[in-house]
Length: 297
Image (cartoon, rainbow, N blue to C red):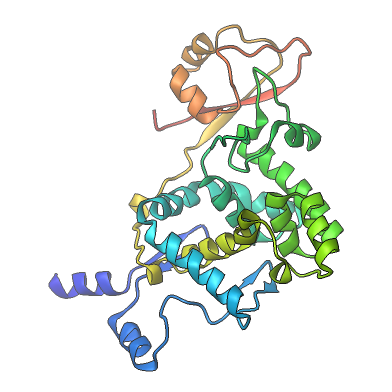
């Protein structure tokens, strides 16, 4: 038993939605010390197939900063790894459907930590849309329904934005930067500075860090054990199976509706966070799909 336990603590391999988490062996650490290299720092890295120029001194240091920060935010990064097991299987096929590179799932990670966050400026949801932008991209936002909290629909809206930004800038990296700095804001900097590469631009502090934060979380989540994160399958959050009920009329009391489905109001709201009131007012007879869990309650 002692021998098997040693093997588990040394090597440990876990699959999280296509991500392998490896614990690093003592031999690898000793090799890094002998060669005078940083075990945690990648020799190369890219975003959406666009190479990050680590030979540029400030680029390397900015990535190093974000790796150090996020590798040492142990509780936050651990929770992100747990949530990714549930969220990424929803996000990944939508990105693929729209032809948006898979790396953009890490943009959602740094925007919200894969929860329905609320910013001080009013951005909401996993993808952190402001109300006007959400409406422009086809989401419903009102007192009763806020589709910024709907993971599938907000992911589709994010894809539409990113495809427009890619068409404008010709670069996925700049498209990602514009998600933070805005298309007009990034374009203004490009025109002022007469360069067209994200890594050559002097941007606001937040936008300047933005892509590096994405890269850092990508690197850590794809090589979690290297950064000290070892999780076992039963520690990961899983998607609870649901059935979808179509409604096309007003629901005057969501608590009563939930009880009629064999659940309670709390469980209904957990699985349908886009329902923002105690009732669903629907005079236009719009069709909505409400998810009802089949287990886990």
